[in-house]
Image 1: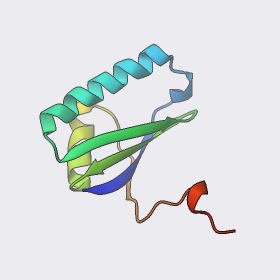
Image 2 (image 1 turned 45 degrees about the vertical axis):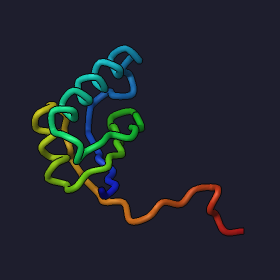
Image 3 (image 1 turned 90 degrees about the vertical axis):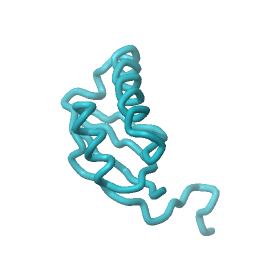
Amino acid sequence: MKRYVIERHIPRAGQMSQAELAIAARHSHQVLKGLGGDIQWLHSYVTDDKLFCVYLAQSPELIRRHAQISGFPADRITEVCSVIDAGHAAC
């Protein structure tokens, strides 16, 4: 499966409580279960007005399908080409 970053514009997302975020995550997970094993949510980053979600999926179309069923926007879907982190930084 390919790795994608999904940008979701959600006004005041950063002001949501942990309980509200947990409810949203459970709802998303239920929809993912219904779509089968070709899509998987890894984690999300919450900012003031957006969520940046990292998914594994067979295609962007499957991510769009998840967005449609779950009711969460998928404003931008970007395939990840590679990952770098502090452990791989050049000196």
